[in-house]
Length: 237
Image (cartoon, rainbow, N blue to C red):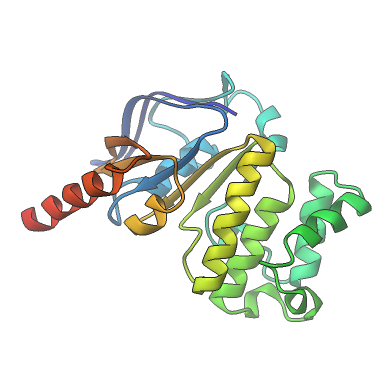
């Protein structure tokens, strides 16, 4: 699914949270957005998902304005934070509900859940513990598994590696790569850790003060260029 931003701005009072004159993310790209806390990364994702209204401009998914149609929602999934979860359900109940919302039949649901077994511990599905009472890492696993379960054409994730242990981070990286390859899916994720982005993204967008200040394609010099950029910011601050 192609993402196109046109003169996109979001203000909160006197603060310009996002200011992107034009940006296109092509269908099938795996794109990481990196920047310091407060750079505008999460607001950008919320604009793309129509969770907040822009002050100006448009977000187009496959040429359709997200504020004018809901057709894109059936082909999109996301996990931004705990608010995407339902706290009074167990993990199994929550994932079952997500499958039903996206119209998955029982066989398809079980097959997809099995494909996620390395990442989503079967013991987690068997527990009667409510989502709200899980550890931060297990809540993250459940939310990410739900987003991957529906095999969307567009997958949007905010800080997906937060709270995950090193093994889970490796498993998630592989799952995202497989999803992109098998579904030709567009994946957009954020991080404020450069290594997470460089290790996964094929294209890296750097945000600062709501703007895209670097657009770097994966390559041998990408990490050096980005490390030099952030080193410069550290010296200036």
